Length: 82
Image (tube, rainbow, N blue to C red; front, side):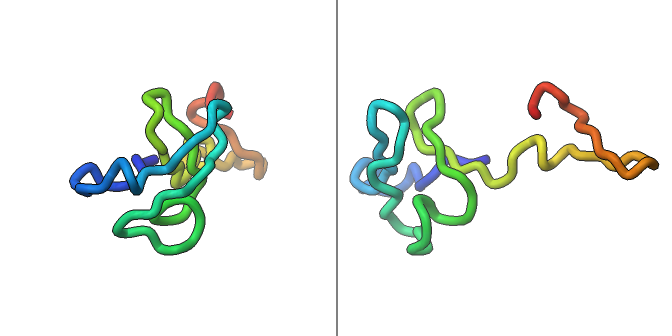
């Protein structure tokens, strides 16, 4: 995951993702680097982080740590993340 936007952007506050009180996106990122698609400057799900900043989830941990077994099933290194 990564933060959405750029801290070096002189208009960061103007360009940032805006959320409502329930954490739903009101307005997506609008600064330099935005690809014109979705709510951020690249693919992935955008959510409000604990600090209130927009976070782009590129790949969920449960997708990163799946391991196939000889039986054709899969398990996660981190079962609590599923």
